[in-house]
Image (cartoon, rainbow, N blue to C red; front, side):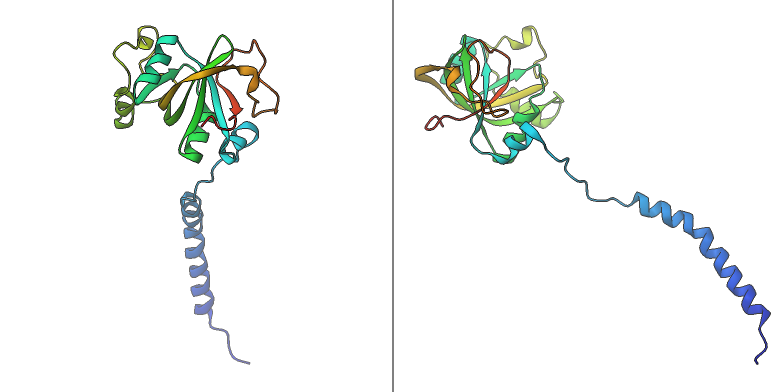
Length: 195
């Protein structure tokens, strides 16, 4: 039987100590490694807005803003609420149709081509939105010039035949918009031939 070498035991012990000393820093490095960020799983309305290309927004605006919409190639509109589902729709499909109503009657349509939530007014992106605010726009007299939701609408049209908002079906539950419903935004399915 060969004799055991005590220096081999000592060398193994030192090697083991060395490995244990680096183990904690290796664990830390492993945790710090950047893992690809997973997109949050969309559910409910947001999932439908991402998956379906036949959705639209129903909103209200002042008559003067709607006339500008029909006059200019592109107009910036704003809202004091974050339109997260609308942003998801624009991000997924590159555009999102919008219906505008007054007193329950849909009078105008357009297409949201760009949307920004909680914009930094100093950013280059926000400056693009500022370019499409008309001279007669009075929104910033009472609210931030770029509000929680700021969006550009193109292809604005005044409808030759306005229709009741009750003809629009809600994305959330497949039921018609109620006659007196005025909250905004509402997410609806496009009527055939509107866009």
